[in-house]
Length: 304
Image: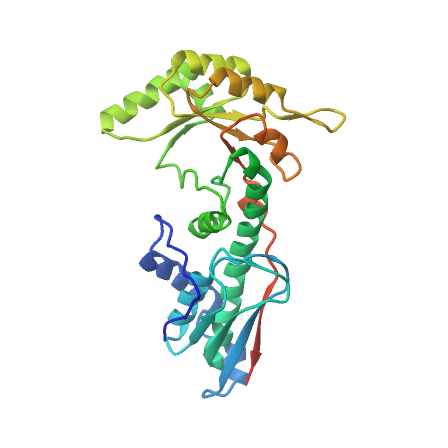
């Protein structure tokens, strides 16, 4: 049976049900292998059970649609009812869903469901807190490619559910010229001009972003032009006394003066985000949202 939900969050443009199903089958094969020997050994074949999804910590729930597909692939006879929607806030102690069906099927799906939902909810929750911190300044919160291999699409979706903005998905959908590219290309102008030649030869229309590490780099980029974004990396710097100096970032944003989109990276935390956003930078990016995930504590409690 299909799951029931109060509200269904839209699928992100980079993921569809067929792609998700392929990933889920790989993950199930990794976990179950030739069979769940514990469940097969101890649980009667025809036993029915009911489970309650419990939030043991407060945060943003994410991954409900993913959990639905896991259960349906394991056993189409499993019935789910969600009392919350993807991207909604819950407090500790909230029962946010119920599941009913063959006990063996619930037990086989349980760990994969919780692993994915806890990770996605942790990412969504961290993103939400960062978004709220910079909301007064209208600053966007961007994600990065610092995701877990094999989980990028879900990591990105979780950022989206937490109110963040997906940046590039991979190495193929945006030209992002980092410091090492600049060195290998022979300089800022050479890298930008080479990117334009590449796009022209292949008839590609891709956004171009380039990293700056100093005000001199910013000036060189402004002189050359031909980009969409300037990535201001580590322009907000920790001083020896532990305070954060944002003046270099403020000066860079003032020099750019709206000619290009601006993104700040480096030293982005909940404690520093507001000061960085107050410089007028358009967006901040944080790899910690996805590479240092603190899972949200969720559980599934079965009853007969």
